[in-house]
Length: 363
Image 1 (cartoon, helix red, strand yellow):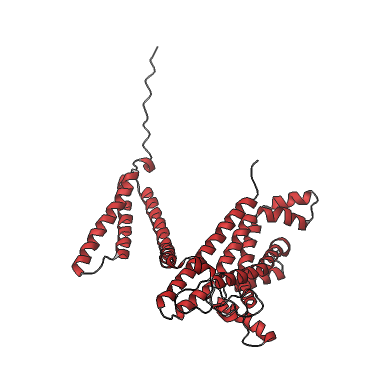
Image 2: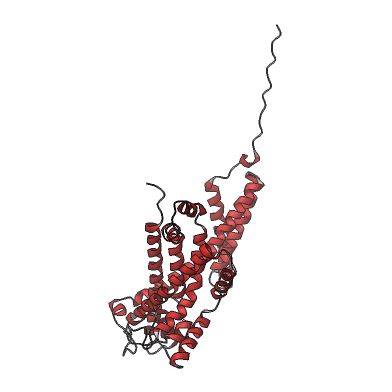
């Protein structure tokens, strides 16, 4: 009986994608080394020229050096495909950091310069009969809340119903295409044009020179409506048609399907879009200068007299500095900080509302 020869052992070559792998500490070491090398170079340049360290140039050069080093080292140790992946990851991360720099810089600058102005008097008093130090922003906060609230009451129902028509009833007919075109045009109009429109509208009936808070609400509503329409339309289109068809199969009428199925399903995105529209207009200055004007006194009536708002208050305090100028600048920075905090609170409320009212997927 002839013995069966042993089968040859076939060795499978290691895939190139996993031939080698940089340790996590190696990546961080390359980044730290790039930062240290460019710090030494720019430090020597600063000492030689007698100038301060160029922080922006140092950061950009360190980032570029890191991208070059990580690409070359990854190509040698791992593979060219993995090196390209690490290079693109580094570019995306750098783009994110660059985008965050102005945001963090603005927030930090406003916080540092405005925190000193925040006290009890600043929130409980107006600027009536105040010259120099003292005074507060109570009249501006009240005006901002009233004008923006009225604008939201006007624009949110109009925007929601327009979006519902475009998605549920329009079906790309001629009227729907016209509305979509006008919404696209309104999205890009400058805010000053909205203010001029509101001023011209009221000047036709009440005469030139009229100023009141409701005019500012109309101007802000013109800016809010296209944002609400666009955001709501996109959220409604994301609702699966199967949900609508299931409701129709049960005999539910169309209007009840929209109110009980479609809107609750998309309420999280709609709420976010509405809050974004409010955040977009709450800091507008130009249209409110034309329509609502500015005043140093309290005014609770939207339909009578001039009304102060936080962005206009910030502008007037900076533009019309008195003695001492530091007091006016402090009030301007303080009002800007309060405005940012209000926008932050609105976004937090939007997230809470979206989380509470969004449809639950489990028991």
